[in-house]
Length: 150
Image (tube, rainbow, N blue to C red; front, side):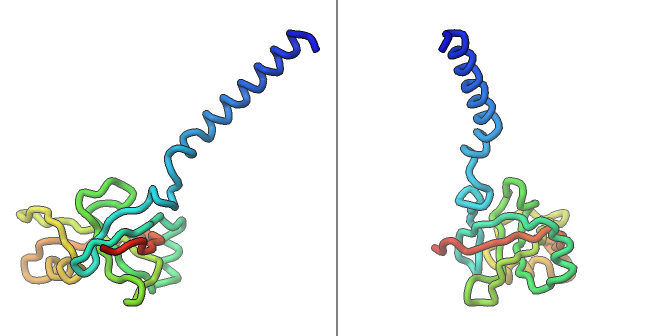
């Protein structure tokens, strides 16, 4: 084989390899959005638990046809870094469904944001003549599983 042919083939292999790394490298090192990279701590009835979650595509359609979802209360959209830990309303063995509708917690004027640790606290803060928070249901549904409890 001629030297120029060998050099040409090596060049093609290197370019192909570089293209492969450029196209797949970031996904390979970022972690799966459905694996440990999507785990986060949340509260359930005063205890911190870890959930694995990802947003379900076509959530709005899912909500139109399936109202038996659990609720995850979040201080801001779950696709973003959280200001406060979220609160869930069920775990396995206690009315658990792997589909969770996101409900945003919005602090009303005059109230300082604070951490809630149970659904009862969230609902109490949203009740009364001068509620501390407003609950805003969204059309986003997440598939969540409880990974670990403390």
